[in-house]
View (cartoon, rainbow, N blue to C red):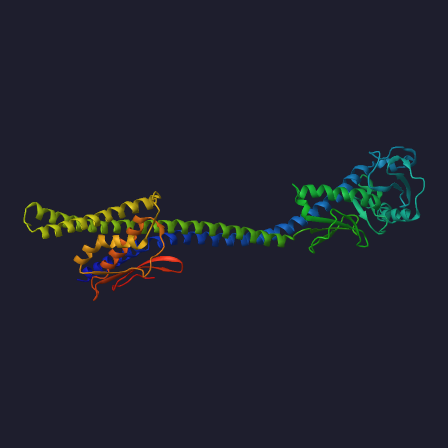
Length: 488
């Protein structure tokens, strides 16, 4: 028993669901499309948010990487020059070779230096130092300022001490001595069997650094780290030891997101980078808003298209239902006059009517039903023509009250048979002629009269009032009955 009840409940529930889906098939279809679409939009929103955060970090990291690249290029320039130029063999500083040898260095000139020096140490740590022109390393410098001499003496002091104390140095390296901020010295020990016998080095040229090295490395790194014209949104600025700008890649103020670093060797110089138009954060926000707006716009267009398609489908379904109802109603309406014509025709054919008055009455019935049948057929034809856009109207100048009177005469017999009386109120004074399609006006009036009869069958008073008059400069036909009426 319980199983039968359960099966009945399930069947009832399934029936209700089928009925619901059938009645709301368009809403169900819309929900089936919109719900996944909104899910995709939500997922895309989450992805865009994540991309926004990643873009901010990536933009900042890219700017820092650029600064690191400039620093590495500057360091590599001086380090490679120093390692190449300062590779002096030990015999160059032994005994009289320091003064006798003409070519101590493996290269002819050194870029970025204002002086190059070579020093030989004796066992007491005393030094004999020679200065060379960096543009021609075979020529001695004629005059050396005292400040530069002191800078070299200070830089070589640890090596002279190592020579005096006979300290071993397995692998000499190039290092920086920045005691004098105006004379930075790159120095390298000259060793013989891991013992210091001398030193060689160069005093860096700040002017060459500002005018040649720094602009070149900034420009080369821009093309490397910001390819395809993306460097247009960054401004690179170099600053001197007093934090005054000495170089800028673009003449623009830019944003307040500048990142600065100190440069190698010339540590009191800085290079900074900042955004010109938008910071990485602003660009990420703009990109997020643009992408989200575009997605929402495309979604709105897609939903609009779906809604339009569903509305069109709904309209077609309603139109199909209306056609079905129309065919059903017309079929019923056609059977009624045909049945009447057939009955009256059979009576007359079988000779059951001998009275002339009765024959005339039957003839009027047949004529009335024939007119009604013609009206129905015209309705069908007009409906088909209107739907296909082939309906044409033939306008002519007529008196409207005459058209109404002729139409009422056509359906008078049928209305009387249905128990209805027609009251026609003609205008008190003649109306002006109107240019109308006679058949279209008659057809519209007949349709109104049919509705008056159809929806007034249960009315207490079966009377139809037809008026023709003028109102607000227009001619007007009105049909009044006592039925349920038509919504305005």
